[in-house]
Length: 115
Image (tube, rainbow, N blue to C red; front, top):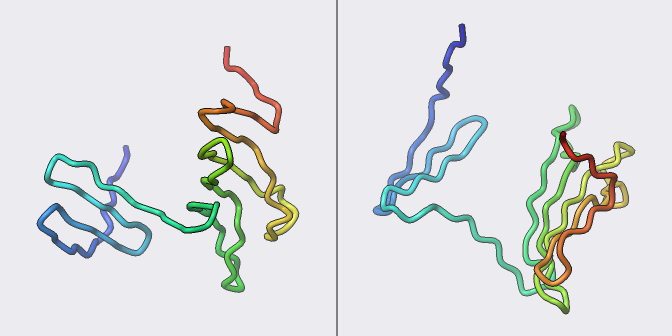
């Protein structure tokens, strides 16, 4: 039998909804029928990055995955990079996939199709 565990959350209420936060998560909840958004903006060609990190025992975050949006000459392009398991440096982040309207989707790893 599954036991539901509910973390105690702190809540900040706004006229559009609320933000809840606790020890391991953040919830952004819209109560006005318009979905909540997180906006990343930059004046550089790399518009935004979401990084997925493991916290090491020494307190350093080791990046394991990265989703980024670059503005290329042919338009915006998403890239997915994953750590190759040989360290936490940028050189260990390997491009797995790129996607753009202009060029379609390109994979840099073998692709398996489920039967």
